[in-house]
Image (cartoon, rainbow, N blue to C red; front, side):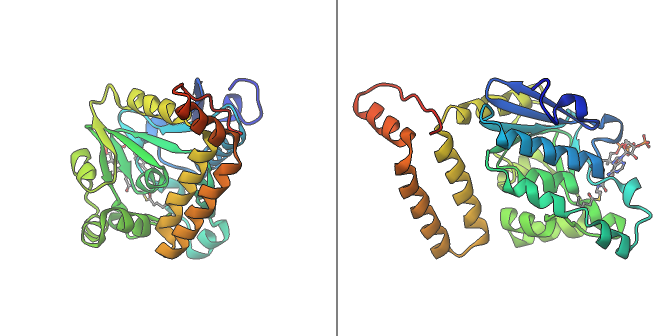
Length: 265
Ligand code: HXC
């Protein structure tokens, strides 16, 4: 990713790298457990959007370090805010752009995944967690509540009673418990979580990109919309894919008993 606009040289709080068609973004404020200050989130959104535009990137891995994916929004930065300064700054609107990224984002998490860190993880599409992961929404202990989707996404993902427990006690849950509740896809030893995520990202990167994109969009539709709307959207996407060269290639290759060569067209 060297030398292009918005890449490594421009970022203070994240690192970007490439492994074949996988773009890797690493949150990098280790001295404060990757607390999400405004600049970090701006940089993250810019890097995600750059990778979304870059045809050579097919999937994205978002990670932190072994000790923390992210311990939440930067409390020091928020401590002296007022309701009006928060309203004028409107710092969470930029988060909406994460949900519009077309390419699959795989979170590779370990250690603390708290507050805004949990909200960021829930914005990703697939989650690989290390055994040491602790996931929670502790905002209540600070006299506030989640502000970037925590009450909404968590409830949709784990159900009402577990969400209530997590949000009202602020206590984190273990990786194993998160797995049981469907918050993460897989739990692996800490030495493996990033590699496991990259391997999965490479597997998806080899699939036809247009189908990948429309599957992601269709699944996200299921979260926000009534079934009938989601089904209509899915059907249109399905028909649309018959305009792609990859559909012709994929089906022809099956009939000819050979491996397909997908181009993204
Ligand atoms: C700013 C943070 C931070 C945060 C940790 N640090 N979390 N700084 N904002 N969210 C800093 C600490 O101040 C400390 O800095 C350093 O990171 C190491 O943390 P320690 O507390 O010394 O580590 P430890 O004892 O291991 O405890 C880890 C911890 C604790 C349990 C994760 O740090 C903690 O409770 N953090 C806050 C978690 C939280 O409440 N998150 C929600 C934030 S609100 P120094 O300089 O002392 O070494 C939120 C709202 C979301 O996320 C809204 C949408 C974005």
